[in-house]
Image (cartoon, rainbow, N blue to C red; front, side):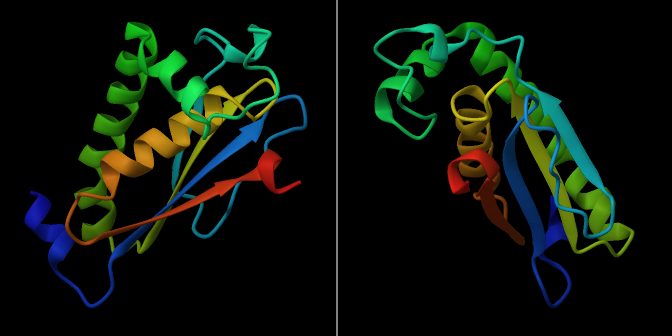
Length: 138
């Protein structure tokens, strides 16, 4: 079923963003398709004094979440859901889908989930991944 992703003239674009629920959802709207995942159930590295000022792109935060079985399971489930939907979107002629990860502040868990899922999805043939971090851009 994934061979379908290689067909066509342009890759399927997956726009992955992180955002803060505290500041409200701010999602890319190309065709309205995609997913929103709530990361607030994961352990919060922002509550750790030595990680508060860092982001999900920093090694220490990444190591914190990557050592958490629940976080790994969560992101694995999210990526499987997204990956399994890609051929369905392609078949319908949709060229862009949106994936958003939200957490309280939009700087730790959601950023890590966006980065991790992007790395896992980028290896799919016929897929172009774009990452946007709403709170890190502000």
